[in-house]
Length: 212
Ligand code: ATP
Ligand code: PRP
Image 1 (cartoon, rainbow, N blue to C red):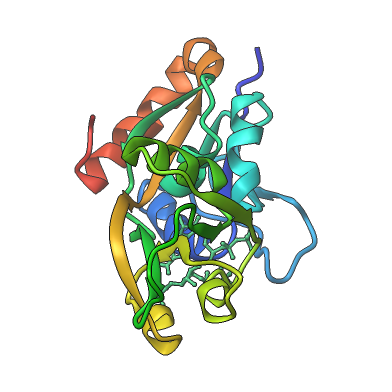
Image 2: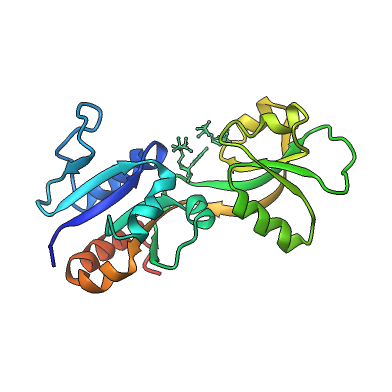
């Protein structure tokens, strides 16, 4: 068994908050991802490497054991649920809410409303829970345009300040889930590399105050 630990970190907002968190437990990047084309970054811990990858790829790398640990948004974890993952810590970073939203001045609700989202599974489960038939239209970004252009009645997306909704004449209609980033762990690695992984979980739990 190798004593290497690879941590897959979601690019973008999560990366910006996750790297300082890892630094607080002594895992400091030695490579600068802005200056280098290296995809596996060295850290101050000789046996710990960091991958900075697309947020939706993080659960795949960790569930399949290509990385032992990962940091991903709860939105992505809800959307791509996988039995091979533990989710031991809520890191409390990149906080926002998954919301249903629509036009401020809306047309009457139709029988089978159309909903744009990139979170099709979350949206399907949410409306199944409400017992409501909808047509889900998958988009990859700028979901706010759906109701504005008449492509849909509603949208399901992340909301933080609410500025994007407000700037497009939209309002929130329902709260679907609170979102923040979680530490995820490959289940097999948790057993095989417990002596290496447990202290990392313990130290992160201590600094974010979550040991659930
Ligand atoms: P990609 O380009 O890979 O599709 P993205 O553009 O969605 O990713 P980011 O905007 O950096 O990437 O968001 C990644 C994660 O950050 C989301 O999965 C979510 O957990 C969190 N997040 C997204 N939007 C917000 C927001 N407005 N405020 C706080 N956290 C957010
Ligand atoms: C996210 C999300 C919303 C916006 C919400 O988009 O998809 O559009 O943030 O944040 P707010 O409530 O503070 O306005 P992001 O900025 O990541 O853009 P992208 O999805 O186009 O990458």
